Length: 477
Image 1 (cartoon, rainbow, N blue to C red):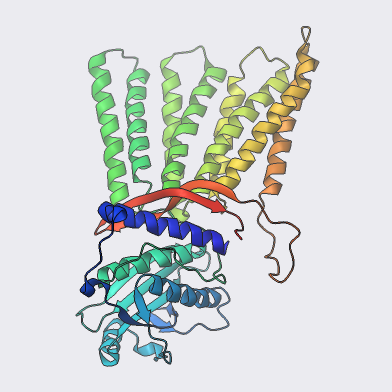
Image 2: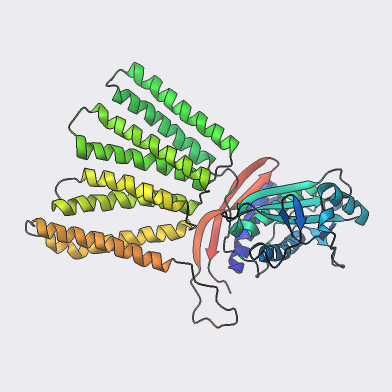
């Protein structure tokens, strides 16, 4: 995976250079001597922050100590790739008690060189997140340059590279658009991390659409068909949804996973409400259909937001919530058809119950899982292929006017094939095995798989833009 990270980070930094200065990508003129002047930098060992006090890593900190050691090696290589010259003399080992912000700047002035101090702080015992903080003290400056971010522990290597790049840009160094060397001992298998606020467009669009749908549902539930009532309600609902999403995305850094998770909470419960009405209460007053959908969607959005207040959400977790709604829709319909033994009637009730409970179970499970989108998609594809295979095997049962028993057999073959395919794909994507001994000879190399994904972000001042590119997953030799 080290080679994979190296290739992905190379593409990311190349994209950042092209986005920030397109002209230089075509023909980069020689930089002035003042800009390319090397900066003598001393990299201090990574410290552990606890209760506002820094201390060196201890063996008792089983998780942070190895992470700090790998971070030292990673930052050393990255700093050189970004144009800094590291002091290879005896490494400074100052007293951690004297590494506060004011003391660090005084230490830089007394040593006459730039100091770089990384630190890690565990958030809570139950959380896997840490706070990564990088501080640069320039003896010629009046203040420190600081970058800090709360991230998952597996994302520390990549985010450390991005934060250091931003600090070097503020320091006046020139970031080189060349591959970043990453220590093979660096732990973690995360190649990239989403840019900050990457979920803002998704949240704006989905909230606006749901707000407009809520206004339309209110108009239909009232029994009115007057367009003079419909269009104002559409505008008000869409405006409220757009305004709420703007406020939320300005107040919090909304990731793409969080935005899609909230979208799942608005789509699937709404669909479940409409299906339940069609299957259980139709024909009744048609306006009640929209009440069911509106209540379901509002409850789903509420539960999703409550879930995000307790746990973060990755892209894979959001995909789990959507997959739960899809699986519930299909399996719920198959269950009702199995009970009735009739494939001619659309199983609205089963589809409604399955959609609602499937989404709810998957949304709750997504807050506890740490999966990648590729793993979830693999399970989905496995279920699809298994279901199609089961349907193909059971299709002879539908020939010559099948009775209830033959129809139940076909449904059982289809549903069983889908569950079998999902189970096989789930086992194939499990990543719980311990890392193999590097000294052992492998029987065969795993395949190298291409993937189009967000590789990082480009920052120009306060503006940030995602870098989308092609990465290769696997072992490169």
